[in-house]
Image 1 (cartoon, rainbow, N blue to C red):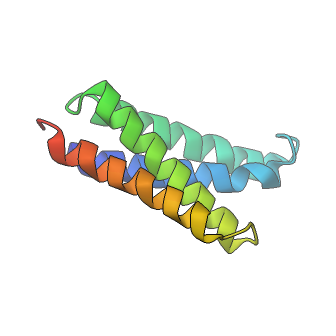
Image 2 (cartoon, rainbow, N blue to C red; image 1 turned 90 degrees about the vertical axis):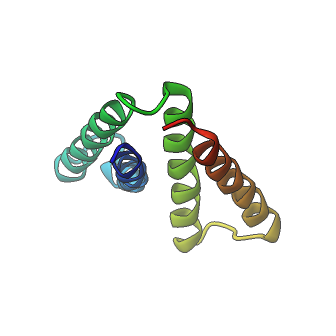
Length: 105
């Protein structure tokens, strides 16, 4: 269950990072409210996951999901999707899977 919570926390991190530009520096009330709710949800689920999963592992997995997800969203929105960028994102995914598979939980 903790791994599922951590995965959802990572998806919420991608969501709040994706909403952040539309807040225009946290000056737009609607997008800012969405950003804050998504951020709070992500942090809450990360905290719940760390009750079972070691902090170092949970944090790296959470940030990895966020980094790969946010970079992917960026590429879908027109940022460069070069072969090297995709390869480096794949390396992050390999690290995430490696940490998850070697965790004692």
